Image (cartoon, rainbow, N blue to C red; front, side, top):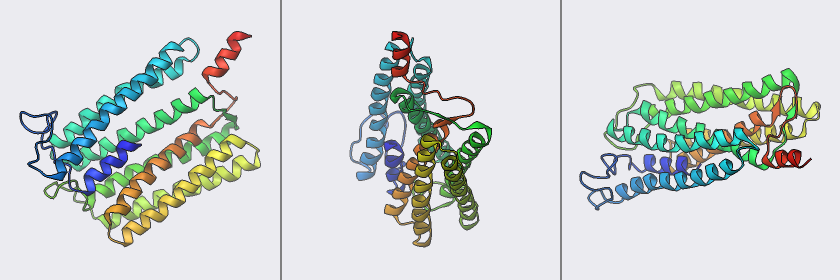
Length: 282
């Protein structure tokens, strides 16, 4: 989540090419030397966060490895996260080498979103979060709402590619008319919000407490994110509000993943290490 926010700071401060090459910051140097002012330190700080995430992912992977006989799914998840973080760094390097191509920048963000989804799932598994058996209709509503949220986020990257915050004054834009793509993005946000309402009503009436809480969380974050989105649009995309919108994106991603993994079609399955230990003890 943090790297999405720091990436937003890089973009809105025009620091995307503060380190104009990759993997070095400058030709012959992996660290800033002050020629680009504060911008290179902002970009370099964002790059350093990747190594913090790699260490965290390594710790999670080792913990899952020690318990791999009890929960193989968690082991595979942490492995995927551990691979995804360096891959994210490589894509970040490609964004620099392509001079902030808007479509590569979008891919960079979308991979971060995918990693947040996987991290949310792994935390739920490790904590033994229960899953409600909601049947086919409930499961369909949860999956459809999650997909709507992901489509909304993807469309948000298209809006960003058409907007003014490119990460550098000379970076190219995707050439789309921002008002038109912003309206389409808003429609997808409303679709996600409506899906959240449907999930709240359905799961509450069918007395599925875990899924209901997740649906409420997604609805609340959608409403908050919607308010921030409209404010940034009508105020002309002020920097602070844009960063807040990216923070809201991470919250929506976590809530959407929580909704997706809070329920299953047929049976309750926590998939937790703790539950596996209890079963082994018996």
